[in-house]
Length: 197
Image 1 (cartoon, rainbow, N blue to C red):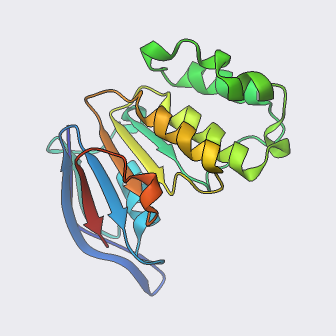
Image 2: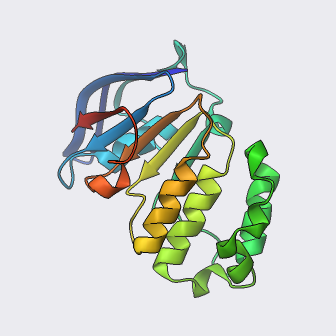
């Protein structure tokens, strides 16, 4: 799979976030997007995921205009919200009725985090627990493109280790793009490529 961004620009009002950015993400690779606050890291992931559209430029998948690639994308970010009054088990069950689960993860409901919190509502989870749930939903989904925006946000040391373990289950043939300035989010990954915004 190859995702190509050609002269992508994005602005909000008069504020230019990304200007004439071009890059090709391809193969089964790990990419790290770094940059100071406000440089457009999160915006870039949203553009790639089609969460938002660029003001200028073009995004293609395997040489064609991106049209129906949503089912190929799995995205986790601290600002993504889930139903406040739904329980952990309800959220996970609904998610995997919509999205295909990685085949080797059939024991998802036996995960200690899911088992111990299955009856808690999302609004009753701590910020770190909410982030861990988002990572589980993202990384246990069968996809070709995984997008992680500041994945260790609000995670304690145990949560960071769980996050590292979850990354090991990803399919071999996939693209992983992480937007973060925190080395603990990616410095354990093999052969990653850094993109500086």
